[in-house]
Image 1: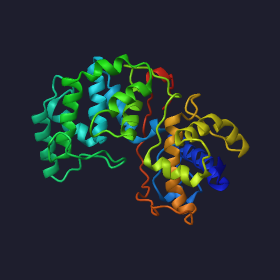
Image 2: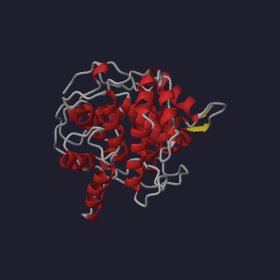
Image 3: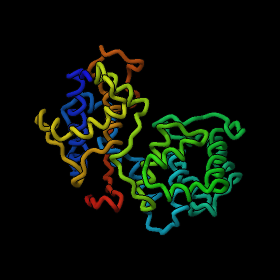
Length: 314
């Protein structure tokens, strides 16, 4: 492989500086938390995926909300939340149906409530990543097809029984991606979120999938991948993170003693692509702008992590 050294080094700089911002905000320091003008002006995801707002909401409100759920209910809750990937949509369903379980799942009633929200001008989907939007189940509305998908998965196919028996993330990924409306990247996101729960305990360092944004970042970072796949590149970053931070004299402060995982290294490529649009605009790309500007919020977030990680801080 042949690196574009300046961009390659930027990958590690970005990962470290974005993590520094996370810690400064957590420790109650005042903005700006960095001298980097690009990071000050634009919104970027955290170096650790788990620290992003939607992941934290998933942990606190869907997985670890203080109630005990059966394995099948937990899997259903995670997939329902992630197909929309929007906190306000989950709140709408909670307010109308109480606790969300397979027993309370009713396609017609769920559809009616979501349709009402849309008619009131409410967005029910997060645009963080694009979900497939075809009429796989014959409905004109995207949400109706997704509700039908959940019904097929859990009530008809009993996907919960299959996922619980999976020994690896890749095995579960192959089951989930076999369904309509779910592409490779979405399936990877779903198995990652399922693995946050106590239902399964798959190894995280055995499997990854490069998403669209990550592919753009890899293309900017490497002139030639040689015989390596995009997933090989992500694994290379995962395996070499300590030595690269050391080479560049960057002090990367982990959460707990947890290094960046494959999912994090994959995500950082996506953020690197965005960062380079401003830092290195001469690099050819089909996207030249960063959509979202950063708006500082004074709210203090108490971060939680999957119980199996044994990480505790506020």
